[in-house]
Amino acid sequence: MNTSEVFKAQCRCVGLMLVGLFILSIAANRPSTNHSGLRSRTRPSPGMAWSDAGHYAKEANDIDLLIAFVKSDVPEARKIGAEILCQAEPSEKLLNIWALELSDSDSELQYRGFLSIYKAAKKLGYKPHKDLPIMPGWEHFKEQPDYYTNIWRAWWEENRGAMMNKAGGNNPS
Image (cartoon, rainbow, N blue to C red; front, side, top):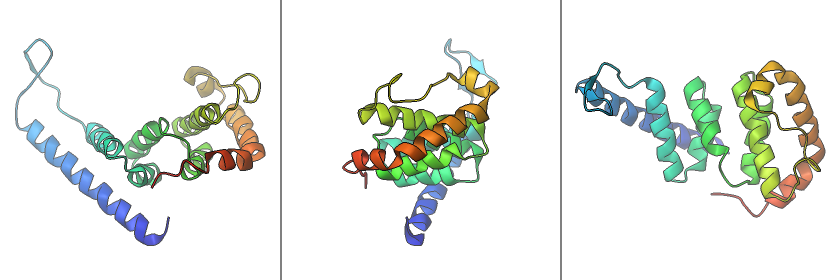
């Protein structure tokens, strides 16, 4: 992604944040109700605004905006972007993003990174328990994140070229 594309993605991201904040300000000034119709004391959180913006980007199929979320300095945005991109069809661009997540300092993003690569590998024809390393659940991963991340980094380095070739025809714009 060149500098111009990054700037455009950042502008879209800021625009969506402003829309989210506007929605939050409206919601904060009106009483909310729970499922039984009673007034609730809870108010929307900034995390909800990021979630709404992320789902808007997903509906608009704006892969670059979701990638900008993942590269953001805002933890909520990074997690929302990673969660939504985890469900996307594999492409060279996304495989590179998922590989970067494996090296992130946040263990949740590391987990999303190898979960995304695992799902992509299955879609590209790799077989679980035969071609792929162990895929722990979140609870097991949290106990030994370095152990599992190192296994997946090594697997990725060994299989990167083949995965990129298989995903080559799936490049979203």
